[in-house]
Image (cartoon, rainbow, N blue to C red; front, side):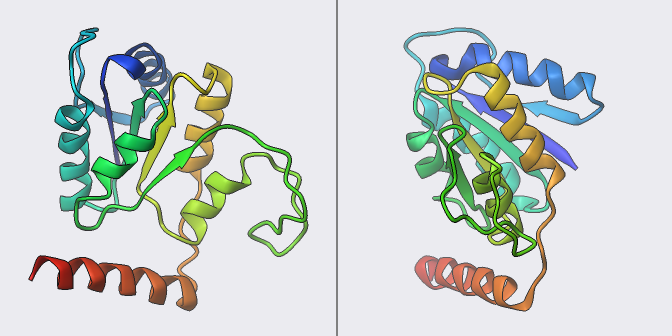
Length: 169
């Protein structure tokens, strides 16, 4: 599995730190830019590169960075086969059921559920919202969690894929 990274100036520093951590952990990482800090760059230019890679190989993953992560997820979700989700940070779950059906107190459960239920393949992080420790923990959960392959979740993803196909015809 290749992990694609992309950002604009707002997430550049966080992307570089996450990239170094992922390489240190032995992941195959491909940096899609930005390759230097440029306050005048535009996130669609780099995020679209990573999203195109995931569109072509949806079993790979991408982590994209921006100020809030919202615009980046919007760009990524324009591409077929992409399911990008935004993570704002840990929270205190209330009556949250984890993937095993038990009540969860894991403040990163939303990332886990994005993988288990939705087979999300792009994680979008807001560099102006998250600190490094929370960002790397979210990335670890995202990369270490598999899709459940439960029939109901697979069926829903297939419906999403069909919506994408119908839109492009």
